[in-house]
Image (cartoon, rainbow, N blue to C red; front, side, top):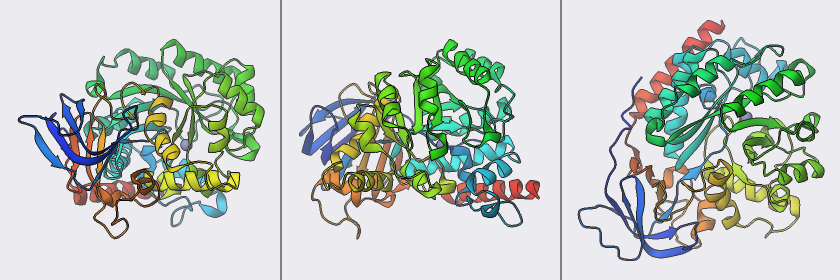
Length: 448
Ligand SMILES: [Zn+2]
């Protein structure tokens, strides 16, 4: 269960690119970024960095690594399977949720590892340097350890949110003792400070009465996380039938900057205002929200209320892939469509959500999300030498509307080079895919 991603920190000079700092320095055409000891050492023009390895970025776009804020990485093993599987339940029986629960219960820790590892490799390939692994198939502590092993081996920056299991009994608490043990043993600098622990919370459960969790139970769960000082995340107000969840949490006094709320498509204006009043961050996952019928994302409304907003993959069972460029593009398109305004959400606005604002929404605003001296070195270099780009016009708009993962030339996370010249440095892709297929075959065979 090892990966080759542990490439040591380098002394690196990214030279001559169009640098989108997404910070107070603004854009630096023909700019250099000097990376040393895992952090951004200098940014400017014609930096002198003796002994540094040079990444020639002339004619390329240099930007902060992209930030995902909610992703069920384990079920990347079930990519494209929201309509079910041969011989099993699926579309007719309930689509994504039925399939996810039906197959999730047949996972073993090694399958969680294989799914999470495939997701990590996809993240890096797509220029994502921070992920929020929303682990909601923890069927025992070894499942958490397996997901964490994949994350630690990847080189990515991550929040690992320890959750429940698919199909968790509504009248049973999640495994709070295991979470407490994990938190108490958490190394001070896990993955050298890259991996943070959080809790994935069911909250009041799904909109389906069969998935409802009693208030005493969900209150006890969030209280336990807060006692441990862990950030919490919950799905809320996704489908129309889940409207009112945020209002209920507000009435219980549970909203706060440490509680990330996912979706909010069907939150009322009052609920958006309540979340804003409590500094509650929101994760928007446009592709999955559209695919599953939650309606359009309400990004513009959330931003207008002043909420910290990040973008997310959610699940590749529904979205198919983890293309954050496409996620940015559909976020902008939906916001402008809702507002009947070509200029409602600009390319810069949406790029900010996938970088600096996404980082801020995860509480990592001082660590990553923009290119500034002293921040950790999470940087991507995007080539325009491809049929789908070819010209270097407005770099922000190109990243949001034209770029694809195949254009990502170089990915650096925490000062380590995880993709170079378009190739992943830490994974043998043929072996990665073969082991994912083998794990899926095992899951399907157990499911019968
Ligand atoms: Zn989700």
